Length: 113
Length: 114
Image (spheres, rainbow over the protein chains, first blue to last red):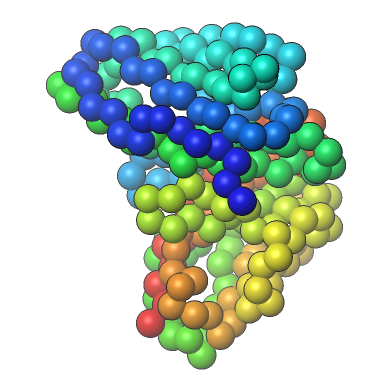
């Protein structure tokens, strides 16, 4: 069953603007990960945030995690046309032993020049 | 360039055919994964291999048969597939199958069942 719901489903912005995507999930997690998928390609890992962390940065990316609300957000600052892709959150749930990622519904981001 | 290589990139097969998808990684990872992704949907986990042993099977129909001949290779054998099995099949790997591990994905095999 699908664990994460993401919103918005689609987001269209201009280059230089910031993009924020949100992810909500249902059960306790070990970690939450964000991935990017360009059209027709595989997924690229962006950031992993552990359940005991609240915020993480990587270059122009900022991820927050609120375990009390079971939600996470991905902020891309100063967006570029090359950021155009689908973005997925994925949760690694507790008590599954082996890592078992469950992906959210995804946000399609379009960045126009 | 991706560090996980999948072949073929595209595959068209009839419902009575037998074919195999291949995945290879040379990062020394000991966990490998198969996912199925339908158009405009998120990937869904099918199988997890840890140290060449099948650790998770997400109730996948037996017409999909995974195999891990060694730590670098992962195969998915296909037989008597249905049209609804048409999808992008993604392979991924991680250092190990436990703990906080990012996964590295190949570009997938786009499978069409006639």
